[in-house]
Image 1: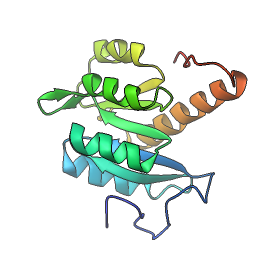
Image 2: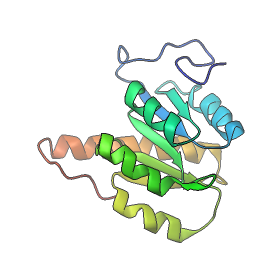
Image 3: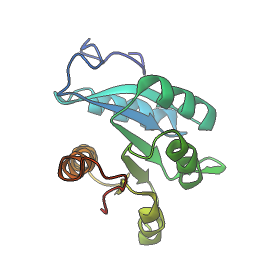
Image 4: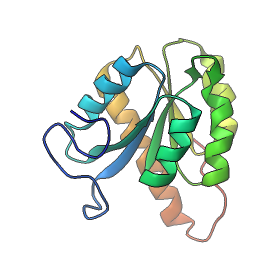
Length: 157
């Protein structure tokens, strides 16, 4: 299975299916990205449009794949995912971000709050919670956009 472009069921990714949300995964652990890609691509309404493992592959992938959401590890090896968000925000302030972390630390979620629109899920939670977190983050963002179509502000989560 490729990490970009197609699912393990052969569904094509792309904007020709607007009901399918495009997910970009950013994590330095390749096993996690492979497992999350496999999980996401079994969902009828989600597909992985790209995977990055560091800042250089992430920004290139995000720019070229135009995701509906970025699922990003809080700690990327020696680099902080929180720091990388500033680069993502320079590209687009309107891409929702779901932070994931294996650290069970409430302060990380609080630290990420200024990076709206975003949410937080611990990697130690059930896989269903990861999918639910992706869907809720996208839904919350789309609801905010529909209620405030001309607003340049982002939703509070």
